[in-house]
Image (cartoon, rainbow, N blue to C red; front, side, top):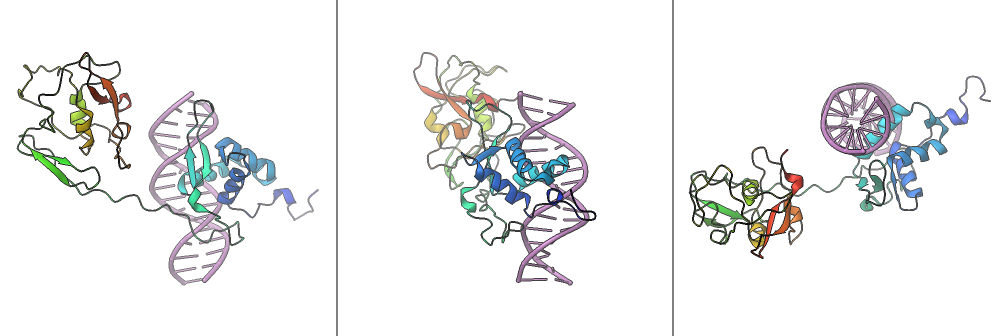
Length: 257
DNA sequence: AGGTGTTTATTTGTGG
DNA sequence: CCACAAATAAACACCT
């Protein structure tokens, strides 16, 4: 029984910040990661104070998970069904509370700044005057050419093919890459209809172009690895019908509704 | 609708 | 007193 005028032990707020409570929960787990609901559970089991006003402190805790770089989200694998992601501690945050105070950290853990934005590049010229190929890492122009589709021998190599299910014509990829769709006949093609005939693009050509987000198109994530993969460009590999060439199509996840 | 996650804004607390 | 960390509130998006 709590004495009058004095709160009982269980009513007292534990001297731990939400960050330290969360870190304790995560570190107590076998896999060093927990879903949100288990973090709640850990705290409520151990600290009776947090069995009340759950709406309030759980909102604060979620704020902390998102706001603090020391917490990272780990997606569930298909064999780990359940709600939400797993939360873990960023490996680089070390012992956040080495000063012994779980109430206040010495310094906020901040992730290094993301790579600086690449220098702006000129928009593609709708009159097909000059087009540039941009280095993936330098962001600097590497080649220039006259025709918007005259990229690394694309013209003459493109082929008509049967589009695999869920894929889109390379014309979509081209607009994704920041190139305008042709408004006139171009070599090797027949008359253009409003329904642009599907064709494909050699993989190698895609690698040499910096993607951009066009009007109404989702931004293509910039590749961060030295060797970009199709996936990082939002592309997927496909075979051209009958041609046997390896080509790409825009990944279905990037399709507009 | 409810759980999860992100973000912004404001207030409160702590340490130097 | 000041800077900064933490707590709180709240709006909102997304997903199941």
